[in-house]
Every structure is written in structure tokens, then in C-alpha cells.
Image (cartoon, rainbow over all chains, first blue to last red; front, side, top):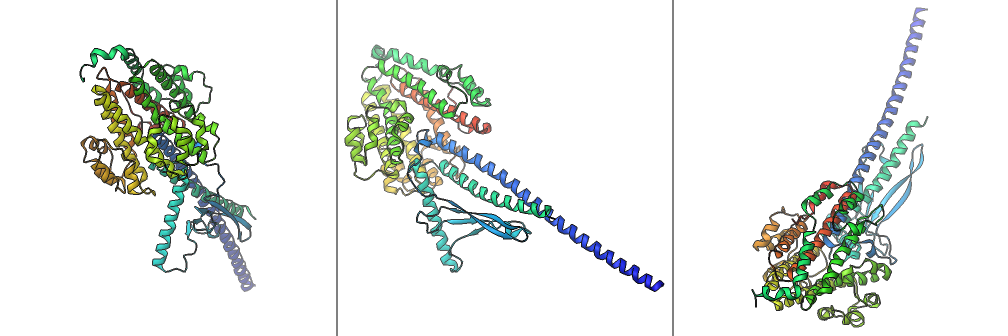
Length: 216
Length: 351
């Protein structure tokens, strides 16, 4: 009958609407994944460019320092061959990601003290856990979260002083009084190291985003 | 007596003055530097240098070249010129020429001691030493644990022995102590050289006083800038300044308490010869300071050739060659790093 036919058409219309909505949702979800992938790819390329630029700057500053101080004072012959611990360390942890299992996450710990008390700054990025939003690097200072603001300021100052001393110590292989250009080169290479870790994390998030797109 | 050198100078030193003026004519010109700045790689630089006095020193070097190779081979040319002059020299010129070597001897001593502290192989360190600063017992430096041993075992029989009186301690050698030792030795050497030139008198004394005073002042500025933010105290910093020069003593008093580059500028701008140097730089900047000082030094060294019958031309020639080698090193580094637009940041033209 006409009424039954109308109901059937209406139900078919509703079903096709539901199917259409599901398809739209699927498409939107797929678009979002593609956008995430493209965002992380863009960030990766930007970081690679930044790394290239920092390394060029570092090598150029090193050449400037050699020009200023002399080739005898800046050469690989003076590098220290005694046993000593690394001034910076890299930690690799596995982070669980929904439906993809574990993905690696890299965290750089710069200028850690020799005693392993961990006074160095921890430059880590939560790239994998923040897939949906623009990634921003977060700095974590160990052991300061429960301290009052004025005490935190003093702790930060003390940590900065410690880092200054560690920097000066690593440059002392070239002598006690070095050119500001050599210090500039050190900072450039330090920044390049941080950028490398960011690149590793970005690459990890990029590959994760790619897997999400290709996964059925 | 000043003014009568023309009567007697050529008897013993005329030939060598002619030789050194011939060498001066062989220094690279602006046209040579322009050609070198156009090079695409280090083999191109080698090809351009083959037409200069360095040609015979570089021709047998295999590709790929390295910037350190270019510097080493060009330094051999300087060493050969020096050896030819010193073997022909009589007193007091031979002593004057020996003084030119002492700065390199100090650098070599510090290199060996620092390298030994860092557990480097002695033979490797000796290969890196400057040829002009070599002496017989240099390898024995590796056994010393402190400055007293350094002096007693090795340096007591070298020309550097008199310079050790101010830094004889039993403290173990570490990076800062070695740096203080380097600067203290160099201070004593400069003062001794200055006194020797004063004793010679005449045009040599006049021109060398100016050149050595400039060297002392430049060292004072470099020590000040390099020690900003380090553990070197004001008193220790002041002890490293030489006891002569335009900045001595009031400029040194002010430099000793400087904490940043702008304060250093404030001190130096009170002295007209250095006001011109610092006016080339903007506030807070120290990148161009080295080039500005080198340019001023080259200007003064070139003026030394305007007068005859004095020994300062030999000192000036050696310093100009060293500046030329520094220029070649800089150009090679910029070409190797594909930074040709930055070549003119540090090249100092002479003629």
C-alpha cells in the first residue's frame, strides 16, 4: 500500500542517510589522518632545514675560532683521550599508541653531572601522545614541580650556573681562555643535537601517522 | 747613534735586507686574493697558488686536498725563508731573528704539555708543532708533571728559561694553569724582546717599539674578552697584561674589571689609535674585532718597509707572511664549506 511504500522509502532514505553519514565520518577521519601526516612531514622537513643551517653555522664558527686563535690551539690533536663520561645522554623509551602498539620516543639529557645525579636539563618532546594537535616541545626540569616560585627561580639559576660550568669544562681542552667564536660554535652544535632528537621524534610520529593512513 | 745606520748597516746586513725586500715583493696581492676567492674547490686554490711562490711546495700534494695541508705547506715556505736569513745573519741580527722564534717555541711547549695531559701520543704532537718553534729536547716535555719539573728537566737549557721565573710553581698542570703559564711566558718574552730592541736603538728601536706595543695591547684586549665569564679572577687577569704599551698602566687597570665587550669598548675608545678600530664595530659585537686588529697590524707592518737600515723589516716580513697564511687558511675553509660569501669577513689585504 502507499503508506507502507512511503514508510519503506522513508526507511530506505534513513538507511542511506546513515550510510552517507558513516561514509562522511570515515572520509573526515581519513582526511584528518592525512592532515596529521602532512603536518608531521612539514615539521620534519623544517627541522631538517634548521639542522643543516645550525651545522653550517657551527662549522663556520669553528673555522672562525681557528682563524682567531691559531691552528695549533684548535685541532683534533688536543682532544682528550682520557676516559670520561658523556656530557649528554639519550634515552629511548617505548610509548603505547592506540591500535599501533609501541612506538619509540627519544629524550635528550644534556650536561648530566658525572655522578649521575641528573642535574642536567631534560629536553623531551611528547610528539606521539599529541598526534591531533600541533606538536610543541616541552621542557621538563627534574625535581622542581613541587617547589615554590622563588625557590624554583633559584633552582633554575643554580642549574644554569652548573650548565655554564660544564660547557666551559668541555671547551677547556682547547685552553682556559678561548675565543667567543668557539663558544658560539659549541652552542650551535648543542642546538643541532637538540634538533636531531626532535627530528627523531618527528620522524617517529610521521611514520606512525603514515601507518594509520595505510591501515585498513 | 740614531741616523747614521746608513754608514754601517750594509756591511753586515745589506744583503739580508735586500733578500727580505725581495721576499716582500712576493707576497700575494689583491688580484691574487680575488682569483683565490673565485675558486670552487681546494684543487682550484692549489692551481692558483702554483703560479705564486707557494707553487713548489704544493705541487706534489695529492688530491683531495685538506685545508690543514695547504697551511702546513705554505708554512714551510716561511720556514725556508727564515732559515736562509738566519744562517747568513751576524750579531746582533741573529739574536733579533732568534727572538722571532720564541713565540712559536712557547706555543709548541704548551701544545706538548696540553696534549700529554690529554694522553695523546707524543710523536703525534711533535708532528703538529710549528717548525719555527722546534728545539732539541722538546719530546722530553711529556715527562713533566708540574711547572717546576718542566723547567728543571727541559726548559732550563732553552732560550725560554729566563721567562719561567714568574710561573715556577709545584702545582700540577691542568688546563687553566697551562693557559696562565702560556700567557705569563708570552708576557715575559714580549717584555724581553722590547728591552732588546730598545738596547739596539736607532730606527729598529723606534719601529719595533711601536709594533711590540701594539702586540701587547692587542693581547691585553684578547685576554680580557676571552676571560669574560670564566673563573679567571681580576687580579690574575691583570697579571697577564704586559708592562708596556699604550694601555699600560691605566688602560690595564680598567680592562681588568671589564665584564662585557661594551665595557672593553668603553676603555679602548679613550685611546685614539684604538678608537678607529672599535668604531668599525657595532655595540655588543665582537665578531669583526679580530679582523680590525689584523688590518691595523698589517698597516703598521707595511709602514716598516718605508724606512731602510733597520731590523724591523725582518719582523714585519715574518708577520706579513703569517697573515698571508692565515688568509689562505680562511679562504680554503670558506671554499671547502661552501661559504664563499663570507670570505671577505676575515681576509686582510696587504697591498
